[in-house]
Length: 247
Ligand SMILES: [Zn+2]
Image (cartoon, rainbow, N blue to C red; front, side, top):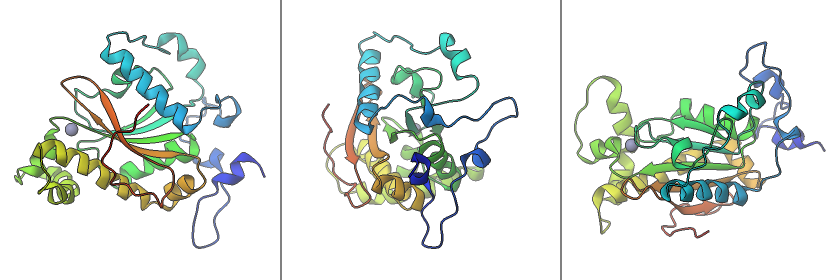
């Protein structure tokens, strides 16, 4: 069995043959080569540790800004990121900066409130299955305006209420928790979005085959520290474990 055979999309029906060359989003000038061919053999835990190590450099003001312009030529024709991260659009949470990573390191999906809708899920499935990132991180953050708006049950203009609707169940879950209401709601929203990710048959398959780990995190705007508060190894693991994962 080849490595790509392991990535056949899960389905209760007969699964189609996995054909990444037909699925990659690329211009004709960007030749497809299997990402796995030259990818360093990082485990999911090592990928998480790499993120945490980068965050430690960031909070200690020792960022090395790895893989910036010097790597541009290397990654111009293909990318081999090691992590897929769903984060908030908030301007204070730039993921490459807070994890001290560079070009080609992170496959990033940013949307207000770090919510999972079909559009975000499509990108996440691409990052985890096609690009074969080892870790999938959902990152909430302190003082999140989207979660705060859902907490205040305000009516917003235009399409912005769709964000509120996606976050609202987390507000209800966190209503009776002791401590800071917004911080609790942000954490519950991360759990909620992780649960939505597990509704994806493709994500579930990757978890079951231990090709990826799904993790939740919280970025503290006051300290710059990212806390990883749960790490899943399979779809049967419980998500709502509110404890820090120590590295
Ligand atoms: Zn936010």
